[in-house]
Image (cartoon, rainbow, N blue to C red):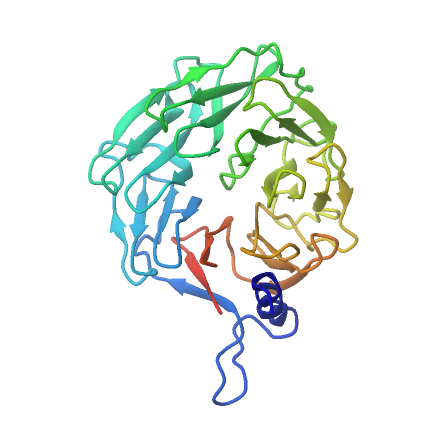
Length: 353
């Protein structure tokens, strides 16, 4: 059996067995989320970087950044000093020692920090000088090249670029960016409103306007094209919240309406042509979802998470089925099949298989 088939077969069990159930006596339990005690019940973790099954970083409210290197048994508080008032919403980790975190907010509340020693020390590498800008997400193509995105300024989304691993940043010219729609913005809900695949392709998710859109750049953010996404829009709380691409062609989008208790039909979509066109899922998650990730070494399996549960697809995003009802905001998987999820009340979990 191929590695891809193994991944799909193992996770397909989630569609038939409740997430907390165990297999027959003497058998290993079905794949399920295993909560890890972070010791941070007052923190909501919307930023997550899975390095491996052993190593993960989470970033959240109250200026909090935690790191584990033992599979979640213990967590080290590696928060940047003096950041208690900041809201970290994204973390991108290159390994157990090197990471970049993004704080969101208007004006100087939007900041970027980098560490090269596992969080023992941090360097502030960007502080937003424009009170009109509000940075939402950051992504990296490799260890050197990355982008961050801000809500529209002067009618277009603003893109920040780094060529040295986040040690310095430059605002890119906006001539190649399509005009923003009235009310359009990104959602800093899971660190997945800006995602990349390969050396040059990057996608930006939007909402808040009459139409939800996904913007795509094939040249590291210099020029962009915009495509409507079939996910509910028309309200500041609706749109595409998260994207995931397993290669430059095959992508997933999730979102909906983040207001608690409101229905979110058609909250998932997929593309097979790099985002030029998007098709709604035939069977969407039953509610708003803020995070999504492809399962490693699988061409068809992925997880979507939100405050009301986790959904699994095993057919490339055509249909989804709820497999867990725990609250999570974001999900991320490493190449060694180490999948992690994080969310409110200090919740962090690893997928056990």
